[in-house]
Length: 116
Image 1: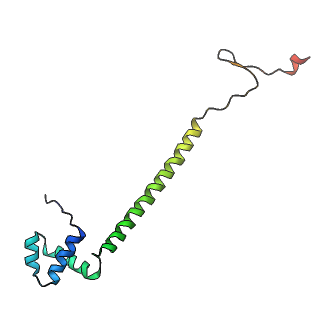
Image 2: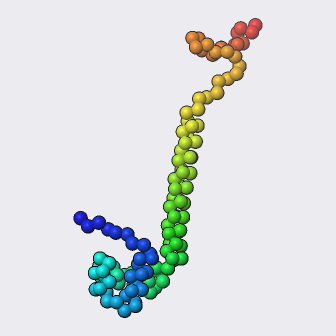
Image 3: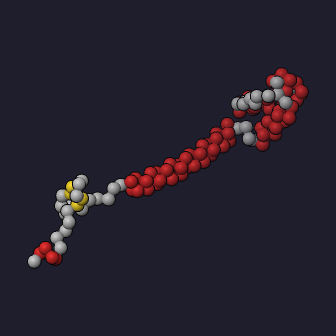
């Protein structure tokens, strides 16, 4: 299976400039081991201003900002879930009215019958 290569913006700009400088599409493609169609695409992008470093950097920055926003939303959701789970696992506070025993349980409150 053929492996896809990744080329830098500088290389794409160089190939486009060679073509616009008068070299043949076949010669450039053969020398750099590229398809002629890919070279045509790069030349069109170069002429449209898509291979400028500033444009490429802005596109990359936009992709990174979108990824950061998605990750921040995920972290917020997970933090909310953690707080919810911590609240569900928190034991009820014991009343401070008196001592408790593991054997007989909490102390029984005095009833009206015992008072008189």
